Image (cartoon, rainbow over all chains, first blue to last red; front, side):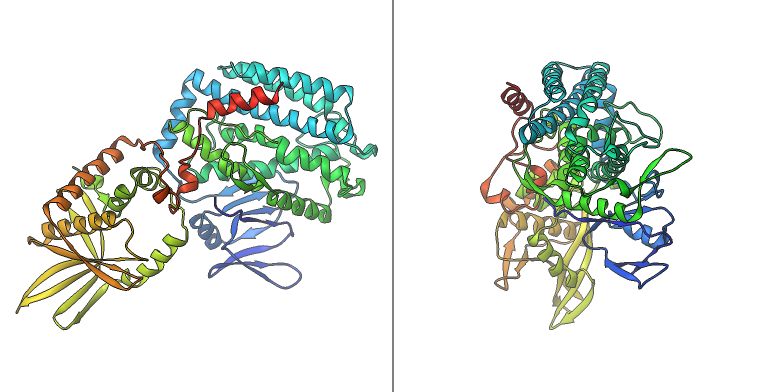
Length: 341
Length: 208
């Protein structure tokens, strides 16, 4: 498997990126310029007022380096991509499968199975480390029950319904995963656009980063990230990326959020609340720390449950994308969701 | 056949090595570089610059474009040597450069023979032999283009075309001598199992 490459996060306002031979030249408003070889970089994520030359954008497209622009609060703005990758036959197979109800239903159920399994795994880990609470045990039971039912589900609406119920139950047990009693980290359910508390701010940031990674993994293997199975097509929405996100969220985002808080790597003072909108965001220095933690988490190694390869966690989206492509092309008899151990 | 349906000659050696590898590269457009392919690429940088050179009755033509109507192939020859027969008459001989030592020699021979058939059609001549040049040990090997090799080449080209037309890749089959050194091993996953059985088994084990 290819080595895990780095994603360059540019968070300094006013930074300007350009191409200089084989390197990315970063000019900052203050301080010396930075030059980074493009070799070893698989993506660039720019936050806020960061500029980039068209030559560098073209170079990134040619080298298959994903470039994404986000607002300084992490909302998606734009993405640069070059010619389409991969195989037109694969995309046709993807569209055909999406049009057949029971085939797309089976896939939708597989994504939800992965999600519920991994949510349950997150609860079990907490029970193992810190003992059980009634909410954790009850939700764990509900999830097990749903996973069993899902094995025979072949229609999208049923899969969607089960996903919704299970997500509500999971997030109602989520506060029990957080071991800090600081009221700054109180959590009463998922909210977004904008996130209204510290926990939601972290979850939203990590979901945005994960969409970016999953989307580029899907497009690297030649899939169309806009045509999903669980998520219906909607212009401008990366539905397939959202499908695959479901099973990966607990593994990448929820887990990191919980452990940053429990290990006191983030504190109440790291968060700012906008007095008008109520939006909670990370203060600059803290965001840098959080992004570093995200990168570090992706370097952790594990054994992939289906392929049995030892890999860096950050490669999971690529392997899952590849497995999905193989299934759609008729090379593999089903899609094996990532089951976390 | 439309000229747009012509296939690259380079796919012929992949077809012989493993039709699935050929499908992954040419149908699925996958390409993963490993040490072997990187060394091959560096070796080719010299010859791909193109140009001509003449030395003691042999003219070397580098990066020569090739095409065959009967095989439906196109490509570029590393090097075609033109040997001087008499004043004004030069005989073409294809030469292919390979890294390392001779391995699966049949693949290299078929690729060379396909190049020869292209040259025969393009230059209205008959070519009886060509050379394979292996970088270690630095050694060139003469390949006679006999009836058996020509037949294998035509057969391979036909199978190559029918796979490309159907877009269906042959199923993966693990073969130790080939798979372990293939740069597409991780993509091909010749040892992969059934996803359905795996999922059923994992869920029934973990949910009890």
